[in-house]
Amino acid sequence: MELTDTQKKFQESVREFCKQEVEPHAARIDQKGEFPHDVMDKVADFGLFGCVVPKEYGGLGVDTVSYAIAVEELSRVCGSTGITVAAHNSLGVMPFLLFGSQQQIEEYVPPLAKAKEGLSAFGLTEPEAGSDAGGTKTTGVRDGDDWIVNGNKCFITNAGVAKTLVITAKTDKIPGSRGISSFIVDKDTPGFIIGKKEDKMGLRGSDTRELAFENMRLSADKMLGKEGEGFKQFMIILDGGRVSIGAMALGLAQGAFDHCLRYARERELNNCPITGFQAIQWKLADMYTKIQCARHLIYHAARLEDAHRKFSTESAMAKLYASEIATEIAHDAIQVVGGRGYMEDMPLERIYRDVRLCEIGEGTSEIQRLVIARDLIKRVLD
Ligand code: COS
Image 1 (tube, rainbow, N blue to C red):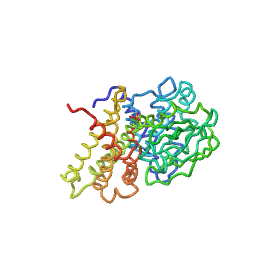
Image 2 (image 1 turned 90 degrees about the vertical axis):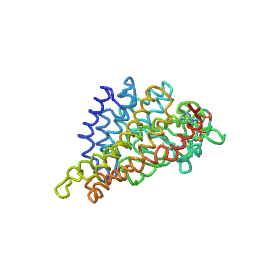
Image 3 (image 1 turned 135 degrees about the vertical axis):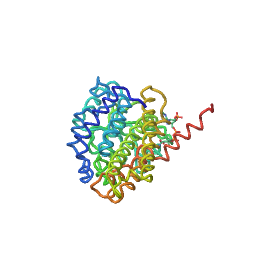
Image 4 (image 1 turned 45 degrees about the vertical axis):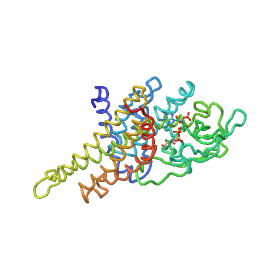
């Protein structure tokens, strides 16, 4: 899994940035449970909110492997920062790049790449439409050339700090996944209500909220892509998003492993570091093997995306595996460290809470298994 020289240099620079500007704030971000504007301003200055944005629109224009590396490195030191960057790039900006008109791209993407006026968010999930994303209840009804949108969304990452959102609404009465469309919503649109910030188990610095639309009027030019194509659009967006959530899980797992290995080297029992005991050696070996497997799956899915090849199944496998092993590794890291790992003065208990979201967000593990199995069943056997 050799990285190119450009990817390696990018990895080194992001790693150094994370060490200097993000890691020292990670415990405070978690404890305060508030969106860390100071840290996010530095992330914006470094350009990471524009990872997926081509240079011509003011972004870094890095490839998907490098983008995954950025999310991995951020999450290795701070899960809240990792998910904020991942949601902005994959869910907030990508819909414009994939489905926006030239005019929508030129208007919305450059400020989102700079992230100085606010971030972006993706309003898909609803109280009654989670895994069953086709069950969207939010409606968009035509009124002349405009659309009147009514409904609710929940668990929306970056909602309270977003300048621009993309939301989905049912614009046709056809049952099922057809008849859903995507709309661009500017945060100050009348009828757009941002709900209370959720008090979460982990990732406590990321801003997660409910949204409500009460007779929200949107002009026809706020529709993103073609009418009725919303479901397919967000399936494609989620394919990419799952690579980034996999990368986030990988970063959290690597972070847990780093702390565990450092502790195990220093902790002595009968004048011998506990790394001298096979029970610990085997655990460390298993943990690192799983981390490297996850890394291969994630970079492979990212490379397929970069090559414009089909990667839905590979991104589902990467996300499924990385998030499940990250949960195991966060658990095992605390087991190796023991009581000290359970305390707040080590980051392991924070990682243990942060990592739990990875098996839920952007499609649960069960949904990933469904996506993988459906593809396998359709395949012609060699
Ligand atoms: N890329 C492009 N098109 C896709 C696609 C993909 N990855 N996946 C599905 N589609 C298309 C299908 O080809 C089908 O097109 P046609 O209507 O032209 O035949 C259409 O979308 C409907 O697909 P399908 O029948 O598979 O939809 P289902 O209702 O059975 O749902 C699952 C499929 C369960 C996989 C989907 O609802 C899903 O991923 N749910 C999880 C949502 C999620 O991750 N939520 C968390 C959001 S956090 S932002």
